[in-house]
Length: 386
Image 1 (tube, rainbow, N blue to C red):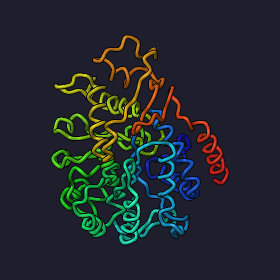
Image 2: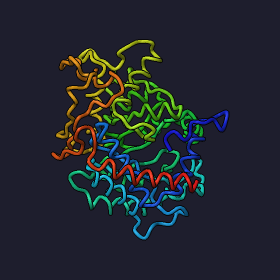
Image 3: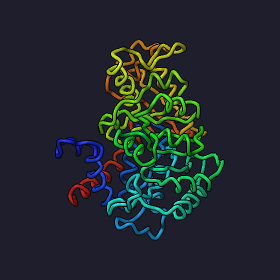
């Protein structure tokens, strides 16, 4: 649905109106469509230079909310797409139980997402038994508004000290902050830090709207904040307080989230540019130890990504840039990262290797054409049905 929600249908267009279109698409996707969409996404990610993906996955059931004969059918479609394209996958089945902080039932369009705690833990157990070197399985708590406090405590108790990724959307929207204060008496991150054992296993996705004490708490916990600047801009979320958070020793990663754009270069560029717009200064993402904004943000994102994905082998994956690209003419080790992040819009990658296997050569994935052909047909069918 990238590019299909950019016409004003409501004078107060926001994340919440965008979500309605997303629900319409989600209601039409079955395991076969899930595979085709995921495969196209993963090809695009690999060609852009991502070698690992944390898949925040909450489209579990049939449109009416009934489980498939195999309750893991939608998850297996994603696993198959990752295997066939060659990307490392950290699969994060999402727990989604309520429609708001007030505990309201899921709407008709949200039933596909819903689980009881027992059913969710069963799915998690099934998938974790299938882990291998390039497949990690963790948990995603959709958000504080979608996971009641007692359910969150029950899931965290069940996993105990297990070393596994734990992700949650949090403080993305000001409305979410206001609702959390009204119902739970605290801001979202404030509440989470006080009620959950947040540590280095955790990734807080977005965390856009933070108080100073919340920033200090996240930094002290050693959790990663996953920043998704293209999505946060597309949805009108706001800008993360990057300079202040990094000054506290905070850890960051990047993601494409809604996938309106799929490019680590664009995420890093707009992470920096957003800060320049609000501070009216340049090179905000640099540091005293690393004066290159491009290199500092790149290295922070790599470190945060490795921690967030828990893909140990990913540190050995590598990208080869096109030395003949005009944007890299005269490049030096000192200017390489800044050229990669800030110079032009032509892809600079020549090849990408994952787990010792070349998956992108001469800038193209070997299966790109066939996968794109299936995706085009699938998308056309979805648009026709809508």
